[in-house]
Image (cartoon, rainbow, N blue to C red):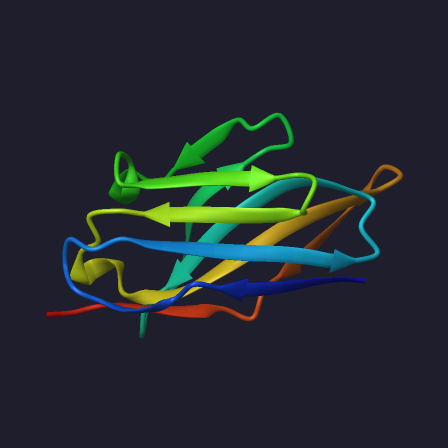
Length: 119
C-alpha cells in the first residue's frame, strides 16, 4: 500500500498564490505518473495537471500559465504551485499517483485539501 499526505491548502484572496504538496510513503516501487485533480461543490472531479517520471507535464487549459506541477523523486513528493488564483479555482484538490510494481500499475489517491479563493 501507498499512503499520500497532502498539505498546503487554505483560504486566499484572488491573485494570491498557494503551493500544494503531496508526499507518498509506504510500499513504493516505482512511481510513474503523479497528478493533481480538483473537485468543486456539485461538480465532477477534473484533472488539473500531470507529471511523468521523466518530468513531462500536461495541464488543463483553465490553469495553463498559472499553475506549475513539479516532483521530487528522492522525496516521493509532488507539488502544485498555484499563482494568480481565481475564485473559480476554489475546490478540494486531490493528488493521485501510479505506483508500478513489476508491470502492474496501482493507483492511489490522497485525502484532499481545500483551496478557497475569495475576497
